[in-house]
Length: 346
Image 1 (cartoon, helix red, strand yellow):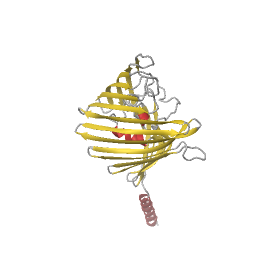
Image 2 (cartoon, helix red, strand yellow):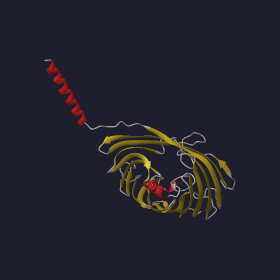
Image 3 (cartoon, one colour):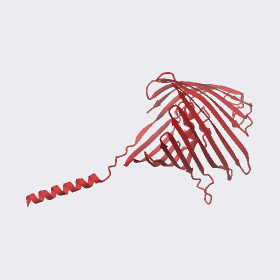
Image 4 (cartoon, one colour):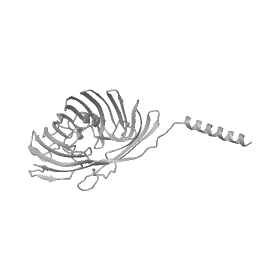
């Protein structure tokens, strides 16, 4: 009897072990906390109407944006994963949020599912596809975003209520998204849709996108069409890159406005810890009386470690017409500025 009982226990144990082995193994996810703390001092001429210079630390980060991130990724097996990202920004000089609406996760907030082979599908507040593609071809790689005008030229920068697909297929990146407008009875009002492609192989990169938004204007909505192309080429330690984007906004009762942005420059890895960058950025707005703004930017970044960087930057901005407008808030003919600071990743 004792032998039979032991055999039953052994058989039961083996059966249970077999069933457990047949079940898929799921890895537990852990939440990662990381971010950037950037402190810089900037001095600028003609900083107000009628002239006058200003020295300030009041920014959301110069070299990099100040942010606090919560990220997690769970392995679901078979190459699949579930993930989320919550990202909030802050102003280091006063400790406040980086936005006037006190939105806690103003920078990004999304959850999604992904597969190594098929790509990722995310839902929430996310960067526009324009922002993604421009980042490949901006000579500064979206450093100095409060200074360089590309962030505000990235088709809205971020979308709320966004469903976004991103897939990498060898050297080709494919992106598509739809941001729901949430207007009853009209699927298109307030909505944003875009598609983008990017190709990167060896020293060559080329990409572009097309997007359309229906932007709120007064009590209605106006159409906003956007496209962008960019290219890059790496030659040893130097990478040349540039691009062009155009935004065409028109609708009943609003002026037809075309905004064009062109940019180009280089990034030179002088040593493994010292990087020099230079770029030129030009903005033309058809309905703005200042007409054109041109900005030249030069910088040096020195890495004290993998996480800590010292930086220095100088820029010169000129305007075609010295009138107070959206493009030229101070109405000056030109502005000169210098920035120094420290950037730390954690």
